[in-house]
Length: 223
Image (cartoon, rainbow, N blue to C red; front, side, top):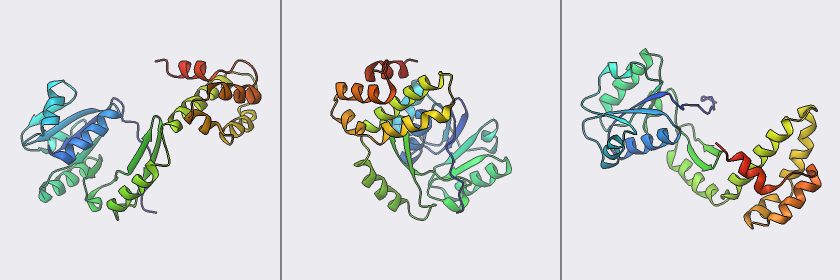
C-alpha cells in the first residue's frame, strides 16, 4: 500500500487553493466544511467563489500564483487547467515540505483526496489509490444508498452514551460489552422508524435507568 490512510484536522489551519473554476470551487467548499481558513489565488474566479469572498468566508486574490503564496500555509491544492502551473505548484510545495494535492494528478501529489460519504460525524472514505476516480465515485454512489441519516443519529447516541459512561468510576473496558449489545441490536431500525419508546426500553434493558434517547441526543448536540 503506497498511501497512509489518515484524517486531518484542518480546523483553523490556513489552506491555499490555486484555481478558480468548478473543481477549485468544490475543493474550497470541502475545506470550509472542515472549518479551514482558505485563501484562493486565481486569474478568474467562479461566481460561487466571488460570493464566498464577498461574505468574507475566503480570501480571494485575483492574480497569478506566486511561490510566496505558500508562506504560512498548512496545505495547498492545485486545481488549474494549466499543466505547467500545476507542476510548479507541486514542486514549490515539495520544497516547502507542505501537504500538496493536484487535482486529477496523483503522480505529483503527496496526498490524495478520497471519495467520501458523510452522515453527520460518520465519514466513509473510498480510495482507489488514484488509479480510477470514476470507480471510486461509483462505489460511493452504491454505498450512499446503504448508509442513511439514521447512521448519523446512531453515532450521536453512541457518543453521548460513551461520554456518560466514561464519567463513571469503573474501568472503560467494562463498557465494551454494553456498546456491543446496543450496536448489534435492532437499534438502527428503531431509529429509522422513530420508535422512541422502544429505543428507551432497549437502553433501559442494557444500561439501566436514566438513559433517554432524546435527552442523550439533546446533551450531545449542545455547543
